[in-house]
Image (cartoon, rainbow, N blue to C red):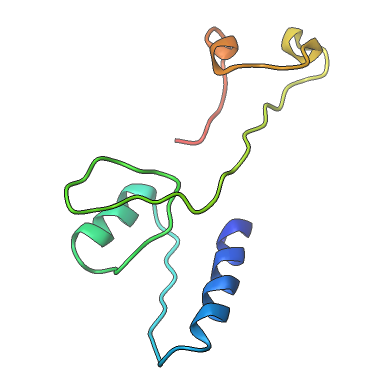
Length: 97
């Protein structure tokens, strides 16, 4: 489980302590499977980094996660104080899919 997943799990457990008994399931699955789980009714809600325009499904942000760019210190972009997504247009990179 990701560190962020552990944080949400701990908060969910704490919030549920004062409620009537509920079943809480944790699945570590691909983002597309997470959405399918909600659409199919298998899950009442899900936490994911991916949102979409799916009829009958609401997406509410619960956390903002800053992106960082990791690069060798000798890279031309490493000398810049700020970067925008457009600055990465011609770069080869690995990103979250």
